[in-house]
Image 1 (cartoon, helix red, strand yellow):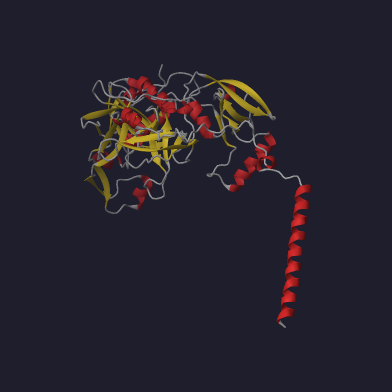
Image 2 (cartoon, rainbow, N blue to C red):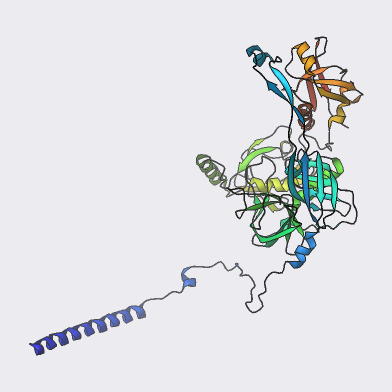
Length: 505
């Protein structure tokens, strides 16, 4: 029985061995007949792609010590304070007729609001004390305190602000201050090392390192000009207004905000590029306001945008295919009287470049225009009927002209104002209003407005405080009409309307 089993196992082994030999023979025959290909043969590479120069033997860590030394002493701590104010509060019940017709209704009492204090950072950009920071750091401040890295402290005053770019220029009275050399933010590359320098908690300047994660990034949040440098260098609260510097120690951006679901740093920081900053602060120093050039078009990016709905994005993609482009800014409307209206620009043209620089998104377009002033000529590259076309456009301002826009504060009106006193409101049965307490000339004098006139509405907006008039004035100065239409009455009960010409030569 054992011998029989051995014979069977022996036969089995021969069969298995034979099968293996046959399999090996078949595999060998198959290999000899096939044309084996390597990875590079199967997947064709672009011959123009270059690998980065790198030597493992010579590799050294990036040295940021000089860059940090260049910038630490030029970054300051800013404390902005809104002083305590007396605010009128409505007390008691309001009659229904008061609600609809603006009567005095109920008791009004004066309540003192608490002072508000904010903190941020700033960058010294000239040795005689000019400092750039974010507008939101000093917005509404009654007092500004600036503390240097060596703990010296100064009072600051506002030279000018620009909410559209979230930049502000302030000044301290001191000389021979440290500064940061300004670099070319356009030359920044994604992946390049940068430092974020801030003075957030009055701890003296602090440095964090990271890389440039993206350029010309739009967040769709502020409603102003958005073309941020995105970095993973830590930008926390209080770092707003600080410096973003490259490995050479050159200023390439002003830290503006972080993007975080918790309010703490989560890997995404954003800075305003120096290509925009230098133009804005130069305008603020020279003119008191930014000379903003507009292209005079309405449109949208053809590239995917996370703020658009899925259906709208599909429509844009379909449109892009019809027009023969991949990205760029699609023109939906040419504004009458604007810059583009005076050139060969049409609806459904796609802007793909300005002055030789590629335009892929609306943020690219905003950044390119933010460097220019009204009166500048730019060469815009368009795609029309699947063909590229260069068009030279003379840029205009918000008023549709190339003139310099001057900063127009309340001084231009040549008058003094106050909120209508409670007893006068009661006498005239008014719910709001701003009283002219004196006219010394200016635009109000030219319009024939006299002391005692009570302004109820300016350009259709009800006025409850003097600051309401200031806001309407700012908007009116930038409008094409440059007119302030005032509706109101005198204490005698006489109604009156005035048109105040705000244009400046």
